[in-house]
Structure formats: C-alpha cells, structure tokens
Image 1: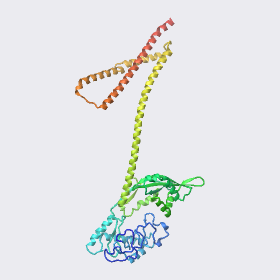
Image 2: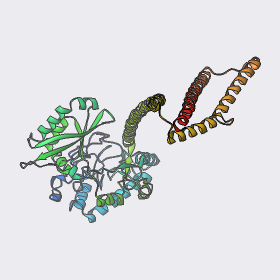
Image 3: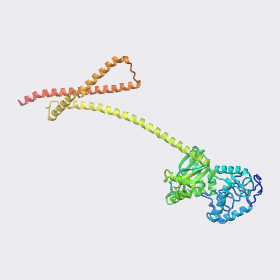
Amino acid sequence: MAFNFGAAAGAGASNPSGAFGGFGTTTTTAAPAFSFSAPTNTGTSGLFGASQNKGFGFGTSFGTGTGTGLGTGLGTGLGFGGFGTQQQQQQQQTSLGGGLFSQPAQTPAQSNQLINTASALSAPTLLGDERDAILAKWNQLQAFWGTGKGYFSNNIAPVEFTQENPFCRFKAVGYSLMPNNKDEDGLVVLVFNRKEADIRSQQQQLVESLHKILGGNQTLTVNVEGVKTMPDDQTEVIIYVVERSPNGTSRRVPATTLYAHFEQANIKSSLQQLGVSFSMARTELSPAQVKQLLQNPPAGVDPIIWEQAKVDNPDPDKLIPVPMVGFKELLRRLKVQDQMTKQHQTRLDIISEDISELQKNQTTTMAKIAQYKRKLMALSHRTLQVLIKQEIQRKSGYAIQADEEQLRVQLDIIQCELNAPTQFRGRLNELMSQIRMQNHFGAVRSEERYYIDSDLLREIKQHLKQQQEGLSHLISIIKDDLEDIKLIEHELNESIPMRGGFFS
C-alpha cells in the first residue's frame, strides 16, 4: 500500500527500483505495527511469558525486524515501494534477535536509527538533484508533525516518524493527580461507552452482569463505589468486590487481583460486550515507582524540559508530571478539564442555593427572636404590675417594714433621676421640641422642594413610628411608677397617725 500505517513489509518485499515507484506492489507478511499481541520472536520467550508487551512497550518487537519500537524502520519496506532488502532484514534479526533487552545488540540499531533520521532531515540522496532539498524539508515537516515516513536513500528503508520522535513539536508536559487508594481497597475503574444516565438507570443490571462475569460465585458481591461523567458520552464506574469467607468474615478483593482477572482474554471480551472500553486498577504508586517515573523522561521528551517540569510541579506530593503528545491528548485533557469545571460549577451552584436558603432562614429566625423579645418585655411588665397589685393587697393593713422603707428611698432616687434636667424626661422634652421645630422649619422651607426616595421615606416613617411607640411605652411606665409612688406615699401618710395612736 502507498501510505500503509498499519502493516510492515515482510522479507519478500520486491521492487527495490527507483524513487517513488512501486505504489502498492509490496507484499505484507508481518503483523500490524502497533500490535498489542506478544512478540513472535521465539528467541526471547520465557522472560515475562505471554505478557512481554505490557507496560510501556505498546507491542514493540525487538527481535523480528517488523515492530515499531527501538530500532524501528530498519529493514521494513513501508510506503512508496520496496526500499528494504532481504539482506538488511536478516542483518537486523541477527543484531536484535539475541535477547529482548540485549544492550550490545540495541546500541548499533539506535545509532543507525539516529544516523538515518539525521540523513532524512538534512541530506537525503534519494533523487540526486535539487529535489532532495525539497524532500529534506518535507521530512522535517513530517518530523515536526510527528507522523509519516522519511525517505532519504534508495537502498535503506525510510525512517518512521512518530510523535515520540525528539523533533516532534506538538508536545507539552502537564500534571495529573496521583491516586491515594491502597491495593487492599480493591477499587477498579471501568470506562463505559455509555452515558451516565443510562448507567445509573441500569446500575442494578450492570452489577448483576459483572457478578455473572466473575463466575456467579455466591461468596462474591459486586459494589459500585461511584459513577462519574466523562467526555464523549463516556462514564467512569468505580467498583470493588467483597469476598465472604465460610467463617463469616469478609474482605475486599485486592485491586491488582481483580484487574488481572478482568484482563484475561475471555473476561475482557465479555466486558467489551457490556460496553467497557478501558479498565484500570486505582492504586497508589510506590515511592520506587514514582522515583523511576521521574528519573526516566518519556520517549521523545527533552530531559531538560522534563527536569524543568519536575521543578515547576506545584505539589510534588500529590501531582506527577505527564507528557501530552499530539493534539488528541491535548483535546482529551481539555475535555476532561471542561467536564471537571462543569461539575465544580454545579457543586458551587448547589452550595450557593443552600447558602441563600440558610440566609432566608436566618433572617426569619432573627425577626422571630426580636418579636419574642418584645413579647417577653411586655409580659414582664404585666407580670410586674400583677406582682405590685398582689403585694399591695398582701401588705394592706400592715406597718411599713424596714426593707420597704429602703425600697421607697430607692424609688425616690429613681424618680429624681428621671426628673433631672439632663436625664430621660429632659431628653424626651428636648427631643419633642426638636421634632416640633423641624416640622416648623419643614413648613417654612417647603418651597425648596426636597425629594426623598419612597423606600427611604417609608423606612424613616417606620423608624420614627417605632421610636414613638417606645417613647409612649416608656412614658406609660413612668406614669404607672408615679401612681405607685403616690399610692405608697398615701399609705405611708395614713400609717403614721395610727402608729402614734398605738404608742400614746
């Protein structure tokens, strides 16, 4: 194929002739370039069994000459024709087939890859004329973009440009929150290609389906920890499984154990039928893992930029730098950021509504408290009046006692204070005179036409009304006290002749 990004040319690639000839004439016998299956090199079996390509390998094959990992492009005949030869492929197999991580075999391949890349970007010799300069610029553009193949020689396979190449310009470093869940918490994340509303409406059926996938064992119980909306109509569901033992105790299945079970081929296909597109064990990273991630820059990221990203980390204890390569990754993080912003805004709106409701309740409560205070004051005065009348009836016909004499003296002092020019009655008279004066001046200056806002005028009237009611209430209390004092004086005057008659 002309622009075949999925297959690598096999050893039988033909048409090694000229320039850009041979479109679609290459025969493909190898596996896809980005294959998640195990490598086919039998010389490297037994290191990790069938899981050699897990982790950061992404299906790279170091021994067959058909992969896309380290040493990619050597001996492959992709793209514009069969530029690779059988001899080059055999040479690559000889150099890389000795072991999966054979450093002496990888060093020449990496060196040749770097030389070929430099040749493709600076001095291609494919056409032998001025068109090679145009091809060099085209190769530079592909390298900057992070996709395509760089042709530079008729006898050497083209260089595969990926977004991990050091010349790709569309790279950045962001920060992600490290999970703080332990393995014994048993939390596993399942990402469904379904909306959150559908997941929540069918949550019970989903739990039953997952229980069937786990074998339908009665000692296992599937529980949903949380459901969260994700971009592109996806939903994240966090689950954990509780295992009950015959003696009555229970425990959560570790997250790594549950995740390993979900990664089995038959279980994974069953999950895909339910709409699961991705699964992950939510466990915290060990200090050794964090140290290893920070010490080794990701593929294609400049070590200087990586070191600066570690320095600029706002919270090294909770955040870890992660590379963002390509527009798809940037768009994905932007969608996640928008989704989190919407969730935060929704939560803020709920909090704002709760605050408004609490403020209304507080205003109502304060008004009730003020009303009850006024009612308490009125009841206190009524109670005092009842006690006064009751005391008068109880003491009727008795001589004045010593404590009552002291009370009379205290009441006389209070009366004098009330009648003092600078005390309450004088101030009340002064206030009344000022009010009358203001009313007079207001009538005289009516032609000046001052305008007051209706709401403000209403508040002023309400305030003055309350002041007037308070003054009237105070005046009534003073009058009642004066009446009581006069009554006490009258009783005292009548008791004095009687006391003299007894002792004469």
